[in-house]
Length: 154
Image (cartoon, rainbow, N blue to C red; front, side):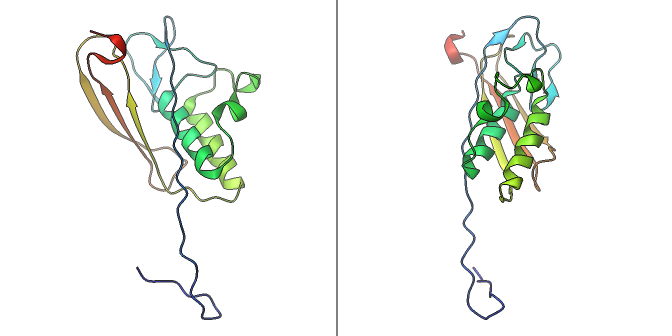
């Protein structure tokens, strides 16, 4: 790895990336739309219960960003005590989380999210997608895997 030089000729300290881990979980709720990774999943059964649109991918990414920067968590910034965020789209929350993190003096490199959940509709399926969210230079990768037998499902 080549080292950078300061103007005075002394080596610059290496840049050490900060890494955060974010998780999110929601119960299913009849009558709600299912949003995951900024996408509306038509015909995939009930949506997820939540204060906002309950997009677990966007919420986990927000929590990862806040965790890496040491700036709290999703509930602190957008929780039920903040009625202006009621019903907000997950991508809107993710965009605002990125703004908060950048305002704190941090640069965002990338975000990777893996979602594992029970399918309400039957067999196993996997979806690979590239989600182009306006919060990172490289986008976010989401892997949604719904194997049978998870969370007590047959």
